[in-house]
Structure formats: structure tokens, C-alpha cells
Image (cartoon, rainbow, N blue to C red; front, side, top):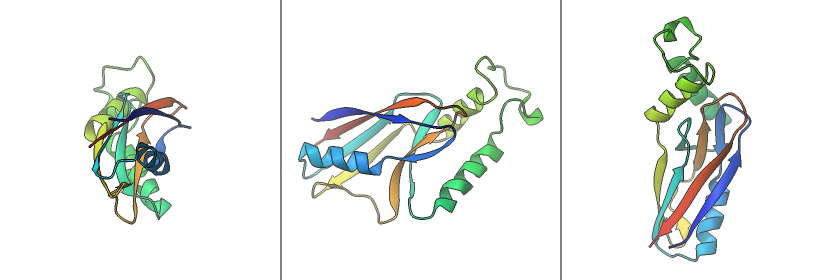
Length: 140
């Protein structure tokens, strides 16, 4: 069962697509049918499958989550206790808890069974740059 760790460098909050890297891993494994498990090894970012054609979708998602969970220095967030790592940290943990840290994607005919406009994204919830590790595991 092939497995690899993909490292993505982020530049702050946003959605970072890595569909091509996941597809390349599946191709190199030579599997015909199976399941790709994608797992991010962090607690302040998450994973999502989302539209990869119109960048407005990604911008709107980011705006939605900013409105849903503002920074901890926003007056509406004065109930937050965990503040040691800055005003974006606890909100990042909340956003990660509301989304996913693991995805399962079927592999059919040696390819990811994604829809036409679907892409795989790391959803960075922190303001500053990070190096994020994503585990790709292919099972038959």
C-alpha cells in the first residue's frame, strides 16, 4: 500500500490546490481501483474538495469563514480563552473543527474519481506562512 507525505507551503489564509500532486501520486502507484486517503497533520488547517474553475468560489468561502469565525481580538470573540499564539490561532482551530482533516477519494481506472470541476485543497486558517504536511495513502 503506497504512501507519501506531501509538503505544502502556505502564504497565509486561503485555499491551496494540490489535485495535480495527488493525481501524480496515484499514477505513480499504478493502482487501478482503490481509495486515496488524504490526511493533514495539523490542527489549524483543514482539507476540502471544492470547485477549481471559478476563483470567486474560493474567495467567497474564505469570506464566509472569516464572518463565521472572526479573529479572537474581535469583540464578538471575547469568550475565547486560548490566546497564546495570536488572534488567528483559536479561530483557526474552530474552522478546522468545522471542516475536515481527512478525505477519502475513490480511484477508478487508475484516476481519482473527482468530478469535472472538483479540486483537492488545503484550507489554511492561519495568517502567517506555514509548511503543512499532508499524508497520501492509497489502498486497494
